[in-house]
Length: 333
Image (cartoon, rainbow, N blue to C red; front, side, top):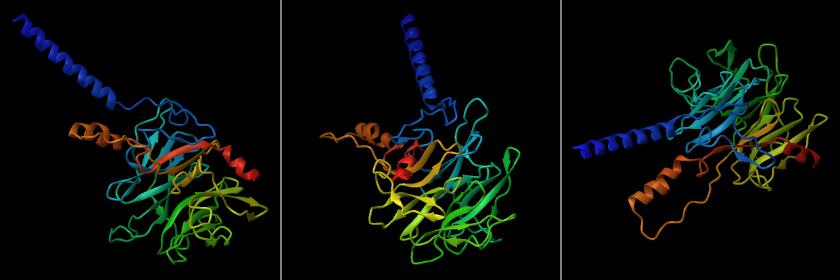
């Protein structure tokens, strides 16, 4: 009888330990520090916040608020819908990712917070009429901060938005808006800018052919408008991220960023943190998979392959970051 009781207690204890281990595994880590508690990179790019922000999903974008109390990124769902996520710093630690208050019903992406923290710009396919039908093309929207909340989003006017895609809004410190648009047609995208007015923007202006020579999009304009990073397809030097510098009002010939950044040629969504210290971007890099054994079993498939796709760097898009000092290397060239 004693043996039976001891055996029962042993089973219960083992079960409790397994549950405790599972709970510990599922417990969200305590993230303390300015950049989600992550070890800051040097001049070589590193995966950002693995298994927290960069996971087995497809993540893009990386936008901190100027006071570093909020962080926003986007996730592509299996059905293709994009949703904007947020993490909040309560003064001690960062919260788990949650769908942003203004997102989650229609496709939303590309968040950008102005340098005064008053506006958050993003793109969306949400309806613009009473039919409540999602749009086929992307428009630029924005939401204004009221206290610790974002108000109901408003769509930018028709001189900014067209019947084609408008994506990736980025603003200077003075409020000049840069974005990419397919309004020219021919399955192409170009970079436009619009000067700030008191209550809106002037009509957009297309940058010249030194910049808009092929397909150009996903622009980050620096706060002082002295450099710009963007994605380009079709140039002789290859696909990927390019950088150009503003010299007395003229943009220099764009340089393709290094192969250490442009690993796959599908790098996009560039942005520099509000303090200017780190350059973030998106890439779909993939680490080498394990070699297949001679004879597969379901346990091997489950443990070694199925579970491995719940982690970053498996061919889906992840977020990377690197010290922004690398930008000076291109400036000197």
